[in-house]
Length: 246
Image 1 (cartoon, rainbow, N blue to C red):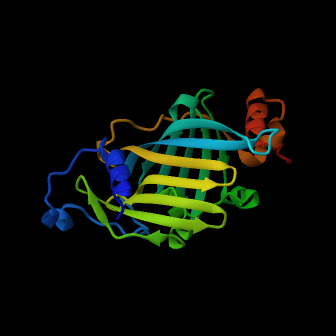
Image 2 (image 1 turned 180 degrees about the vertical axis):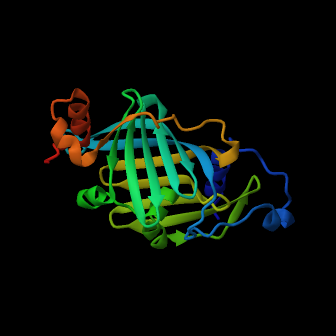
């Protein structure tokens, strides 16, 4: 494996507690997770995502690059996934009940939420598989990339995936003991996105918990059209980029 990759992986894992096992003890020190498993381990993690968008200038040979980044947190257990972007006061909640998945967008500053039922998600074309939500990436993409052998860095098993899917170049590194991405890097014609793992914990050891939202005012997505004069609904519809038709 190229030295560059090993340096990259080492830099991403320095924030995690180092393991003192020797190479001969690796097999017993960490459990290698099958990424297709329906029982992924409970985890809490913090990531930073950086996006760079390339916009053509008047001169066809010049481009303006606009970079932005956001820090976000992720909690995963068997039937519930939570994502929070603390500096934006936003969150997402996904809950699984059998084969049905319910989604809530959480607006912590307003203490309100919008709930999407399975039919809403299908209508909007935003009903990803539970596995995709749990892994934070699409297994169909992974399947089209060249997978490296499992390597060990600071006592953690990692696997690198490289390749091109459609018009995007992908570089993905997974922590195989947690089924969690260490790095997701995608480059395409209009820019790039890079997500890096900052911290990862077993769920019971997480130093932070999701913002309590049980007492939020919950609006059904199907009822947004009945609340078109509610300033909160107006704001949310603008953020969604569409006007809901009741």
